[in-house]
Length: 186
Image (cartoon, rainbow, N blue to C red):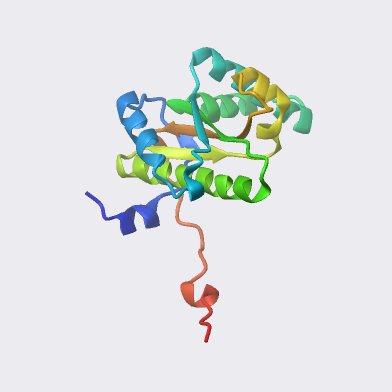
């Protein structure tokens, strides 16, 4: 087994996946363990939705529509690339945050969501499974809430988690060194 230090340092966001299934029991075990993220006041804000075939198709169609509205029609090669990017991953998990009217609690709850995703990415990476956390304006669309049947009055979608066997692992991006970011206080 790899050390947690090695897992953290080697984990990468995966953009290209093999068209190969991940064992769903392993995925569910990782989702369960990811919920052990720090959670101030134990509000349990994380909600996971495991997308089935129809939901995945609807999300894919929505992403194609969103892309075409932004960049114009996709040609055959672009469509193939888009399909490989979003159809090949074994699983799609939508992560949302239960809404809290208190701004400070809401901010702390988002930190829990982010820690949960990071936990999940490390747990999966240890098993040779990759993850891509898609965010941006598209995840805040009322249409995505409608497609996923997630009540926009009660939850905020915080990401599309594409999970699968990596086809390609990107090299390590440049990272700042600790001595560039650490300040010692008296």
